Image (tube, rainbow, N blue to C red; front, side):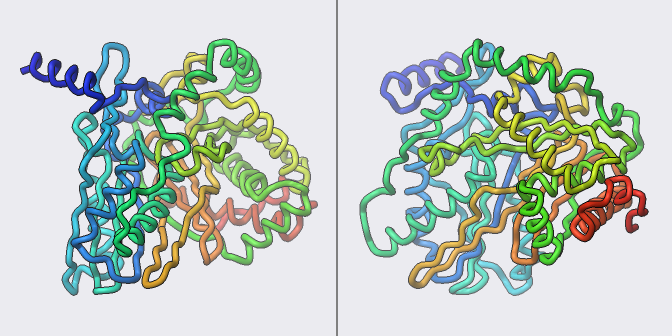
Length: 451
């Protein structure tokens, strides 16, 4: 049987039905620099697409097929290899979509959330594929929820926005009876991966590596191993909101400080984290989209990277001066960023049981596009669900919403009461900084956090 499979693979390769490519650097990160197994369901990311308008079940496969035809990430799975897996990219694949009529007691938000969790929590077969799952839930003739789950090895947060745009364009084509396909991509995911491998040669990695050896010298973990802890180690999620008035005040503070909203909220988070842990040397990791070139912005795929950001929290500095220093450090770190898997190898800091390499806390201000599409007879709005995974002890993800900023806390090992103390301190520090930016950090964190 094994020989039959090998012979079939050879025939498909020879005929051009499939193409084998090395892993991209972000994909290697999942296999080589994560404490979580690649097949773990925590590597599944998902979203809701709220569709108002007719979405006939007969058209659902034809619509999704056009997206599958355009995006090689939708036709991708993985073949085990001698040293590491290979990407197996099919020239063509049949779209897979489930259309489901909901009964009365299934149409509420809580019921939809439960159904979406079922879709997202089902493991993917990394070899056979497909590595996505599409369910269209009909609540009424003009009210649908498209639940889309996809494996992190072929998608990141930006990918979900691209998917919505392609899906809506394909829907309009099908609705109007047009036969042409979606336009070809300026750059496929496979071609992006090849360009990245060509750029990140040993000389470039070593040149930037000197910065990281100096920047991260003497770092130490915020926590020792939790393996012996009685606290459950599964990934937990808690959501709160930063009120719109406070979010606007933080933007105004960023303008006053001559910096960015990211630097202001990161500074407040680092101050709160320092207070919460008792450590002045604070190291977090933040995602970077890696889509600065226009050609890759229409492509579905896992392109994003991670950049470590280290700060010494100086309690005697005014908060107003701190975001500027943080911004300068962020700029230097981003300018010297290298693929995270190569950074872990460079620092000889590979994942241990229960520990992510280099840092244990993830902080993100999501800046990838979250589209809302409106067309005659149709509107579609994307609702992001968290794209964090269980590889970090703690995650804080901020996303701009109508109410201000949504804050998603992802955590392991810690009780919710402790996370709420940290969350309260974060908002207290930010509010105090916006009210009195000239105050010393010591004065901002001396006030006990809300319980």
